Length: 172
Length: 60
Image (tube, rainbow over the protein chains, first blue to last red):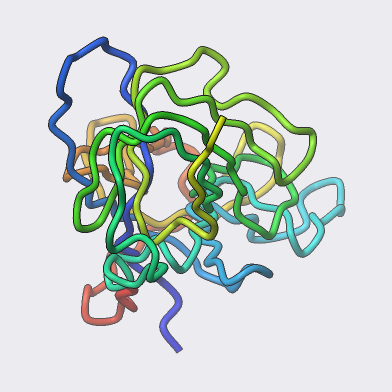
């Protein structure tokens, strides 16, 4: 069995500069580490792991991550064109609500699932593998406590289509 | 490696620099730019091993 893994994935990101027409592209990210399965179709990759029980003799729990990432399988590069049918044809200049899975950086925490995010904003661009929302308001709904993300509202949010689990237009 | 908390840890990544007193190891890169890395004093390193990329499982 191979002990070390090299994982290639993409991720959502936000833009905090007030540009008029942002040029967007999904990033190609990669990480090295020790991999195990998460509980929600995610992959946990640990960059650093404890190799003994230490001087105090106390080990960590099985879900403890010293430093690493929790990556939804939908964020893998090979999954970029694997998304909801309804995302193939979208109307721009409409307000939308999107639920999506986010990659999480973890340090000294017990955790085994990725974050679930909810974003509302104006759909300004529809690309083959991502959407762009203007004036987005995003909250992390899982795990609790619910939090704004980021704490200061950005100008745009770029979200991979493969990360989206629910999409709807907001009619007010 | 031995850490300040007295515990022993192992880490894996790409060697970014090998100075006289420390190693810099990157774990995570965004568009080929290292985003997440650690500087490890050589005095704290208990074992160091170079791995062959053919032994690494690629997940993408």
